[in-house]
Amino acid sequence: MATLLNPIFFACMYTSFIFSLSNLNSRSIFVNGKTLTSDIQALQAIKMSIDPISISSESFISSWDFALDPCETTGTSFLGILCTVPLDNNSTSRIMEIDLEGDELEGFLTPAIGNLTELVALNLGRNKFRGPVPETITNLRKLTSLQLYENFFSGSLVNGIGFLRKLEVLDLSNNRLSGSIPSSITSLRSLTQLDLSNNELTGKIPQLNGLWQLNSFDLSNNQIYGNFPEFPLKIKTLSLGHNLLSGHISPVNKLHRLRILDLSDNRFSGAINKGVFMLPDISHVNVSVNRFTVLEVVEFTDKATQLHTLDVHANRLRGHLPVNLITYPNLTEINLGHNLFSGQIPLEYWPRLGFAWRSLDLEYNYLEGTVPRELNRTLEGVRGSFARNCLTCPKGLQLCQGGQRPASECVGKKGGGDHS
Image (tube, rainbow, N blue to C red; front, side, top):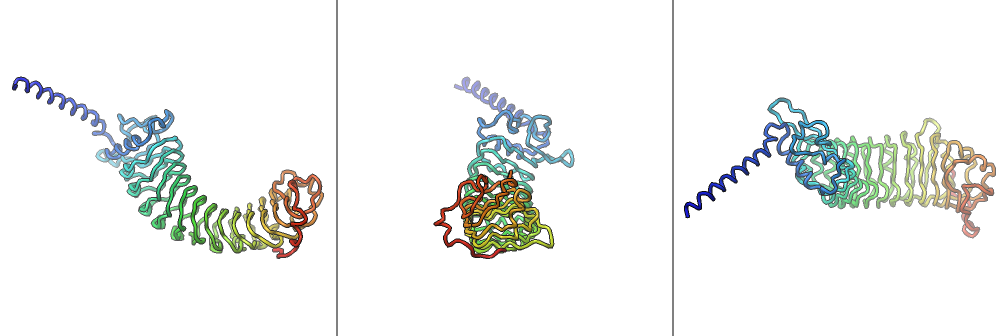
């Protein structure tokens, strides 16, 4: 029996030795490598969490060859990766940036991403990642840019997002994120761009006025409710369209650097107040599809205004059309349609059409009077519509195509309102 055991014993020992030697050789490429082993393992986990069928030969991740050191390779290996530079020969390199944007990758974002603690920028935009954003992402305390837009990430926003205090850009738009916006987001004092649009977020907007560096905030196409909150005074672009927000919008008057305002398709009411039009840098205002009843257009005489586009259609605005719109020298696109305006179109409008004004939409109101015949010669290239009012239009005028209201709808709708 003993003579049989010895060959088996030595065979096992030999096999174990060969396996250990093979395993050592497979790891030896990292012994003298410059990249921290845990960073390499995190990259391996990222690649393993992606469906290999979705990895095309053109994608950056197809160039990740782990027979090589990620931070020592040049040319066509480990594309989409940037590393730190070691201070001396005894230091290791770290992964500081990953950019796999637009590679059409399918899979999950592994929790191992949290081990890349020197990561400064992560861009996985325009892929097909699904599932939750792992909580371990809050370990990446040096991140300045986190872009996960246009994927299929689901679940709630990471509660500990406020730990990423160096973040300047956070773009989680066009995903399937749900739940409320965590209050910890108010800790991101370095944030300049925040985009959470096109998700399924609910609840109220946290008080963001402490994010004093923020200049662009997009929360459009969610299910956010509540009143208009306070925003940081430096904000330049504010997009809250297609939500369930309500109440008045007077806090907008404080945002003196605002350029683009989109509050469309909400439940705001009261006045579109004159303070909005007095903002010195405002160029685009879209407050359409709400419940506003008053439009206060202030006259601009003492200084220039940047207002280029005004869209207030589909509200409950009454009275005469605002004559003061002609005092806005840069205004080119106006939509006042689908309201309750009445009376005549101001005579001051006609010289603007075809020259400064390239688009004027007045359809579905109760406007009356005769449209000048000479407009047929001056309105080439002008967009818009005068249809479904109580107007008398010259034959063949393009802007009147679609017809007017029947006389029965126009009775009792004439006059009323101011001329501001």
